[in-house]
Amino acid sequence: MTTRDLLDQLLQSGRELAQRGRDLAGKGLSLPPEGPERDKALANLGKGAAAGGLVALLLGTRGGRRLAGPLLKLGGIAAIGAIGYSAWKKWQANQAGAPASLGQPINELSGHAVEQRSMTLIRAMIAAAGSDGHLDERERSLITDRIAGLELPDTERRLLQGEFDRSIDPADVAAMADSPSAAAEIYLTSLLVTDDENEAERGYLNQLATALNLPWDLVRQLEAEAAAE
Image (cartoon, rainbow, N blue to C red; front, side, top):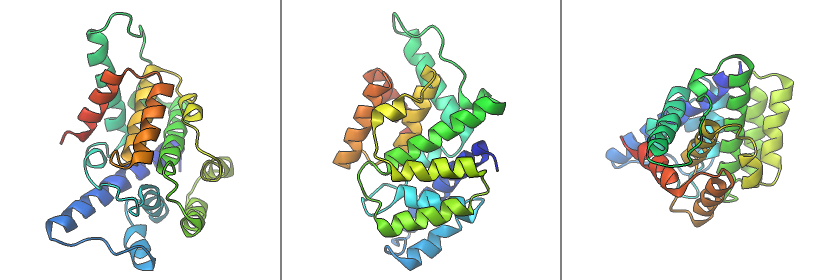
């Protein structure tokens, strides 16, 4: 499995989880409460059990994360790249002193470039998911098991595990952006696994947007386009 494939699986699994949550809510039902039954219900989401289980842990539900909105729309690499680039272009058209070059969106990258961008976005998702401190020891143990089950080279597996083990710093995440397009995509993927009604997570997103040098009107546009269905 390539890093691009993993990112796409995570995004698709998140979309499926969001849709399942919405369908159950429409029937007046809900996912099982935290514990073995929930783990079993969510483990086989998406194209791979390990990726599906990992995204369920990334999303978490203890903090009341909403299973709708951006997850339903941004369910793939193509959507992430297209929405981020489109938002920049719309903002750029009405601004003086806007970046002359936006760089390529992820859906137009190939080879090493798309692998590197994919890992950047996965790392951004992990950092955002842990920004409210919701991951306890049991969940971290499950995450280790899920990562071990991913068909990734040892180097990438170790990198992912290290992201869960280290402290979260929005500035470090922002430093991974090598273009305005990458910055927008980092913000969008971070938005996927956060709840803006959670004070800690909203604060993280605000710090991240500042560190990424994203204008606030562009941030609002990114959030609006991601939430539109």
